[in-house]
Image (tube, rainbow, N blue to C red):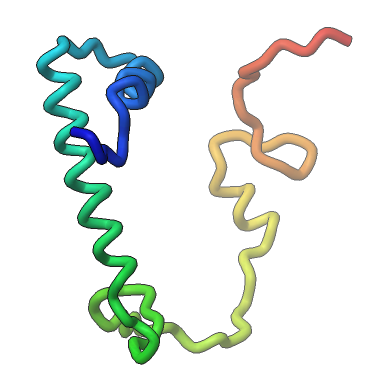
Length: 101
């Protein structure tokens, strides 16, 4: 691989960062595979996409949206009446963290 897009050292470095243990054969195979991917991506740079409109999704995303209508909000007293426990105008929940004062 004289014109490799990625070196064996780079492959081993990324493998180390990913905490992967690669044998010498696996590292060379990974280098060849990554090199093929990078070469393919380089070929995409040569395409003329100036007439292609930008897209965010490959298929149309026609999600129906509800109307933005002002509606009555839940009353605090009603909501807290449904809670198992309330305290000082809010929900009472078990202590999770100890706080030193």
